View 1 (cartoon, helix red, strand yellow):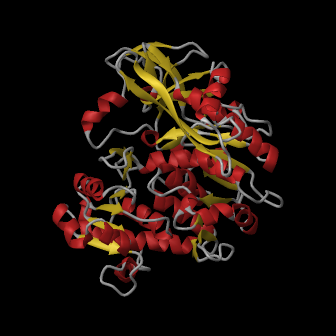
View 2 (cartoon, rainbow, N blue to C red):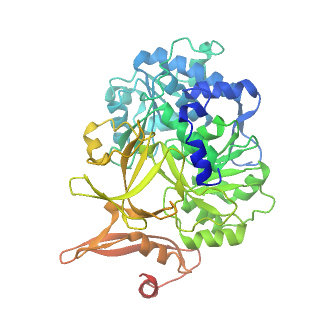
View 3 (cartoon, rainbow, N blue to C red):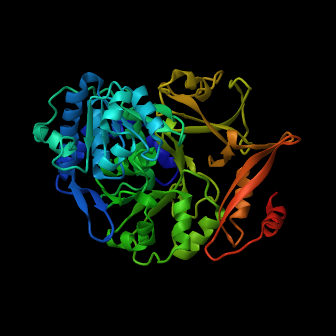
Length: 520
């Protein structure tokens, strides 16, 4: 996909007509028919990151999806809901897709506090949990979880061979039999409940469908690469739509190979340190990471000589112009910023690879079946007017992949603005991203931070991103974060936290002077 003309051509089709089936397992079966023995998922682990620790073929993946789906259906029946509390292991994706085939999957961040994990399992009426022995004990133990979550019937682990909880052993009797039940293949039903936001409190629970995931995965393939030789570096977690959909599902939907960068992903310092060696060894062609990871690579050792990377997208946070420019100068690779959110099933904008330098500072243009506009809403969240091109406002995204809502319907009112003109195709809906930004005359989306993150000083709105962008340009600064400090007179005053680069020094007065000189 090179630009708007390709988007218009794609939009002449229905999204469902661009894939071989309406379900994830159906699509993966279709791919497997043509290449059953091809590597689908490869896991690398220290100490030898250049030798695969585990490999699953496409035939392995489909067989495991079907057998785990049968197991989960046996445990939960038609109301099967499977919680997935896992590091980045191949079973995480296999069980995620098996759970959606049987009913509903609930991927959970293993770094959440036990109370938050229990609340998610209880709220979703989970019938089964897949985890590791260590996480199970850390989060309350099997009996403690069953007591706290009355709906929980089975607990499985992926790292206890021979135990009564071993997932592989429990699924083995179903292997080779295909599905032993008739699945609900409605592509619009709730198949995935993905928590978003929060680390100590209970996150919001977003309702997601298989059709929405497949549409976004197809779009990301068109944006980032869908060639047969695609090798996608998988370093983002499977409890996040970036790791699960934009990387995992996208890669396998088009028959590529997913290279999982250790069970820790980009959290692994050893893996990040060896990034370029890994990229060369496995001929990585595509990846998606955060700006923080790109910054770490920029400050690390190694070079891109001999690498096959065709696409390096970043998302999840604003990308510093300085990092983008210096990354290209050093490695010859343009970082291409994209944008999306869980409520949209993931990625919705990006920079098409037209062979030219990306428009620095922009999150790119809307992907197929996506509309983005800046608007002004009244205090009650109702539409007042659309903003002119280049005018700042609250960004709304209209697409058929907008969530059907939250598991808690009380949250829907804040996400779905009222009073909007009927200007979308049938089946599409506008959602409030909560981001401030503009859409320019060429359709590029520009982000200026979260509406709730604005620092309001005496009635003056200050974008923390403008302060952060200036601070990271200081030669001593590695990372920066600006926030509003409560003030009895001004309401809020801006303050910033910085992390200096290794062996660098800077006094607060130096950084203040730098900000005064460069913050507009």
